[in-house]
Picture 1 (cartoon, rainbow over the protein chains, first blue to last red):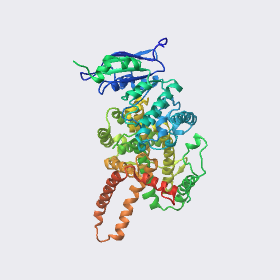
Picture 2: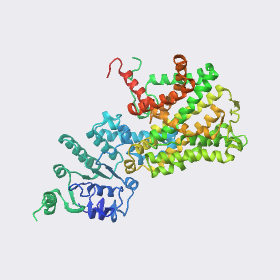
Picture 3: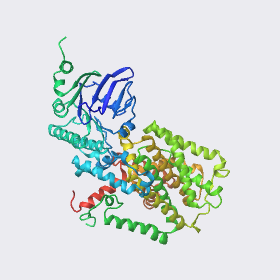
Picture 4: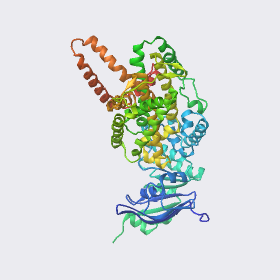
Length: 258
Length: 355
């Protein structure tokens, strides 16, 4: 398993907001092709950690290695170019655009024609549009949102919007997919459906997934690797079984006698 | 009954990207174009061409320019008239100072000059958003009219800063007649609307809308925010600049910097609010509304309110009605007339059923 270098490695990452420590000295590694879950109570620093990984926040200290390259600070654009895609806790779709257009924007880094060619609808633009469209339609088929292809995203129900956001992230053909609470606010059927999509993604495209999730049942079933955070520190790291029996994790979730 | 899409399938992604998917739409468009390019110049009288159709076309172009920036890229601007002024004065100077410069090339260069100014005044948009950006575009508005009045060079040292249209010659033809000026305006508008439509339906248009709807998410999926915003300012100002030059030379004939004051910027903003933000067609509908409503109102009041309302008060009445309509549109239909037309189209699709 550890024969290859990990796809993503965090080394001693710390982050603070105006003196308040959000993340303290966190290190862990995510292997190529695994599904890694970040869990922990509210305010443990999970979302902040995702924001550090894809360059929305710059860490105060520490190094991120992705794909055998080290970065002390990563810009959001750079992360996207490197093949890191993500979804957000509060859906961050482009609400005024159709589902198809949202998915197509996910492929913006693959577009080869420039805006002058697009404006004149000549040169590389027409063929480029067709090839992007084919790839976008593949993702739309994969997540079974065909029938809403031309609907405006803002008019769709919540569960579908979550799926469209996953589609937009997948459209970029990412190496690493960051999912911030992909199943928040869903009922059990929707959770099962979304879990299936995440597993399919990993199996079919070999995408590495890091996800944040509060539903422990889902986490234990989906992921092969669990990292537990509490108050910005790492308290557990291992397979679901190891984490389940880790006394520190139990303390963080259930409390201890003092 | 006529508006049926049954049996009309797109069998390729190219076909799905066409302007008009249905033959009904293509026929309607072709009819409009024949009307506009052939019938109107033949039968239109000077009053109609001069006082209604030319300002309508120029304002729809200006509306298009602002719509690209505000409706599509989400950057609010009150500097539209400033970019129109730059386009007009730049075109005037290219014509004046370069011997034998073709009019169309001057128009293009005037547009480019406005685009350059648009990029400069668009730079703050990286840092500031919404109403604060509005204030910085207001600075463009006041600065441009001020400098055009202060520096005599721009108006070739005319005492009151007035510029006069050069002889309008295109490809050796004098087009100073109303029909000629109408055809010039119509052709330029046709080309710019075609280009704008391609942009909006292409990758750049999607990037603009992405930045408009959620700019952090746009950055995370790899869209270069600054470049995308500045391109919006540049292309929008290009269209506005050409609209300004046409306003000066094809419509008015002479214009001073204060012809492009803040109230003109507001007028263009009203065009896109009433017509529909983020809609190419909306620019047309809004401009038609703004040009035709005052004429309709004065005709109506001349027939019905003659003797009741002092003609001097009529202009105030128009402003009141405009204000009320804008409030109405902002509350009831923020997507404007274009949206209303879309609802009618949806109804026509399923008529005589309701859904």
